[in-house]
Image 1 (cartoon, rainbow over the protein chains, first blue to last red):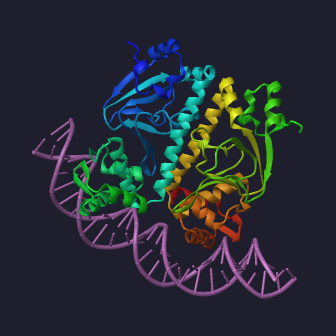
Image 2 (image 1 turned 90 degrees about the vertical axis):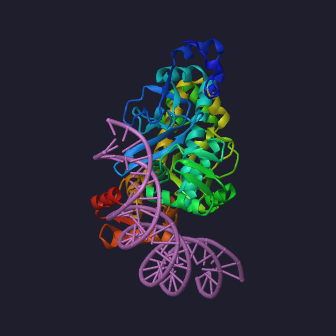
Image 3 (image 1 turned 30 degrees about the vertical axis):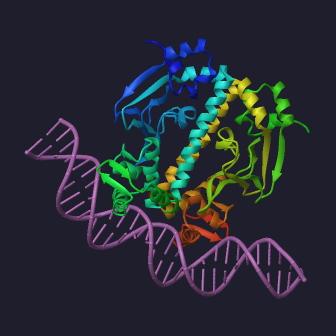
Length: 224
Length: 224
DNA sequence: CGCGGCTTTGATGTTCATCAAGTAAAGTGG
DNA sequence: CCACTTTACTTGATGAACATCAAAGCCGCG
């Protein structure tokens, strides 16, 4: 395989701290894998051997509890996939699956651990990246918990609008998944979207969303 | 100051990876500080210069938002104080204050960064400790969000029972703080505690709590 | 083409927030 | 040390937000 990590658009996460001469070695040992929408990338309860990150696409991080399925966060490239528990336990405490066709890169944990020990700059970079991601997940959660139904749905819609960089997009998740993400019931998510449609804030055709009144949607996010 | 880090009961967090000969240097540069119940240790919005950890006592981590004050988590020794944002931003995104008389140790961030770069074992230890703490805060949040009022209050009471290692203890937080911790109103926290008292699960005299029926309290935690 | 899961709407009930009002406790200044 | 003020605590009544249940249409997939 031709090594192309030098050209990878997210190499800044790890590889700015690695000399080009060394990079080739890591590059060759890595596995790049395409996953289809719906495919599992990580399964809760399995042993952690790999260090996985998302190169392209969109994923959901979730966990199954006896109260049902709970979506912890959505991840895009630059957000980690191999997140929190990678260095804290021996088994994954959550699952990850692709929401759209995606590409992941897989390195062995051992190799990463060796890098941490050998390359202090890499270690620093990794720590700050992981903490930034953990913090954003946690604070997003704290923000969400202060909002009511309509505010939470607005947040999610605006999140998609921002990552797709458009006011028109196809929802990459079902109504049910949105409910699992914001901690409400499917019925009430549907009602919220319906309200937005009736109020002229959105056009909705199934999964296709067009935001007609963005400033209003932002107001709902901030004051609801 | 006599260096006593060798004897510190929480030196395992950091200092098992540091040679005794070197330890003395870090030990001398550190500041040990006693704080009284109610005192601030970290103030949201201030610049991060120090690496602070809790040696003894109990603290609350909280943030002020325009919706009011939100308690993010409680921390005891071995849980970090200088948590998430230490390596992810330049300002604290939360405050920390002591719930009981406590002792903190303060090192300079620069020194810690030097250590990370120089000592790979230290870096690994630090990463896994920080991730373990981040993960436990996040998953505690996820668990809480699946419970209703009485279940959340049970969880908090059982948490205190476990850290004080007794069924009789003085609540180190007010009803209002418990409300901010579990995301409910003060009135409803009081009602929940009142219910437990009426049902013979607790004896309550102000802040003094005695758990009379622990198995019932656990059932409430698990099924409510 | 038929089955199961997703979506949608309505009706009903539960859980919790809000408002109000009063008591107890704790801090403050003379 | 006491009067005063503020903050914490407590209970009840009411209403809002959300879950649950039910029923029906839709869509995709084997």
